[in-house]
Image (tube, rainbow over all chains, first blue to last red; front, side, top):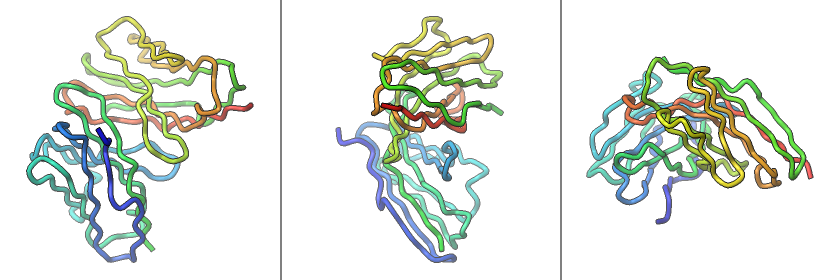
Length: 113
Length: 115
């Protein structure tokens, strides 16, 4: 069990560019969550997948954000036309079926210049 | 909407002493879970302890224990015999039984441990 992994760990981009992050959950964890965390704050929920189905999206997830989880394995989070306000740590977490404990990855720190 | 409040932005403790971090929450749901997560400076979020709301017995994990007061909607974390490695940001979090397990976090408490 290697834990939840996220790539890249850091991403610096210019305003207006598109970025994509990847999350690999713990194997056999069918639930996958994305959160966003700004400096000094608690994480905020973005979206949730159960297997390949995206079951809930936060209002924080504007139409510039899209997430996928093809085949119910890894997940990607894409941000189009990035803005400086998108600068944050993007956290991925997974949990096994019927268990509500989430295991977090190390996060991807996004800086938009 | 559910809210989680941590009223202590910062706390400090001497090594080997005991410290208690406070957390209150607001919910109308009867079935839910409460968590304390630790986020060291490296920023990997680590689960410290978990409590099911239907259980009256307070959860304990080694040096970490909680005081769960359901009627008061209070969920404090007690760290006994504090160690330097306990220094981190601590987040209290809530997950409802009907919310797919998504977590609502408090603002966090920075814990400093003095040698």
